[in-house]
Length: 245
Image (cartoon, rainbow, N blue to C red):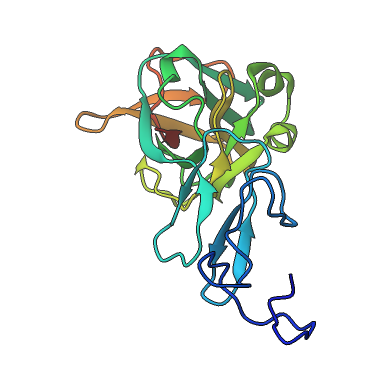
């Protein structure tokens, strides 16, 4: 079937219209062959037909056009959910007079954000001593065993599997942090989100406070100065994650 007429072996433009003689006929399912991957779909970029392969490990993705996009893509349909930690379910590390760390354990209390596709924002309320130096790193750790095993700020920071943001300890106003976040992948049950202070110096160590209720002011929680202080109130973390619909 040459579609050429006159005995030429050059294929002429054709539409596969079955009503037109020598136009190739309709493309038949399970007969017409393409050099495509299994599960692919075809779309036009305005000039040529392009292949969109299926997700490597399908997990509920749908075909979508993001805002401003000119081609389709596979992605999850999600909604942002913000979890606010004010009750319980947290862990802390305090060693010596030079650093401290606190993190929220994501268990059943945080079920609204576990199983997410991404973690898009993490902030917490705090207060730091103006004479203290060092760097606050807001991080994620895979589990409590990893978090609890480390005995230095540098090692705990190195053990984190993601860093959301960092800032200098000194010169921070009291209140909720408002840092630009580097998005992580999704949050699993039993992972921890919190912070560690690295390289802290100063006679007061790295002291801090969490805000339990901003309408009534802050309540001090844990401090590296003295290394053994305990407080009854729990910290305030706000964590925003994208959840599949």
